[in-house]
Image (tube, rainbow, N blue to C red; front, side, top):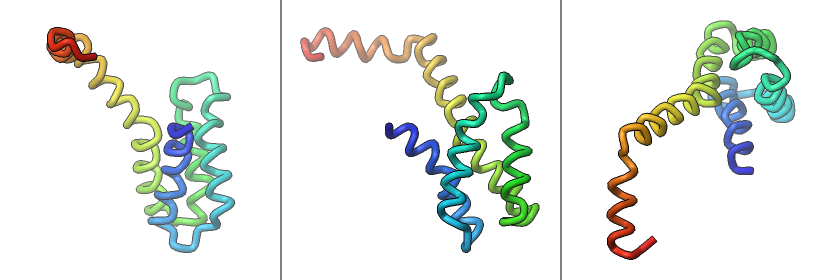
Length: 111
């Protein structure tokens, strides 16, 4: 539940920063459509269709320069951030970063 709120909350937060007079209900609907519309497309990460849709919807509201900047922030926070976190966790697991901490916890007798 928290994941969905945070994921859908990035776009409204970014738009409220960049567009002072953004329509709240419309932004929430766009956030849902852009966030979960990707799931309906059979290409990895939306294959650019999400970015095109974002620009078509928000360029009239923000202008081209601000829409491009908002798109970068939104895609990083809603997609690439999770990819980077996954890479860090995978590398930590592969290098055994978590194992010494688990072994120490087991020796102390605490879980």
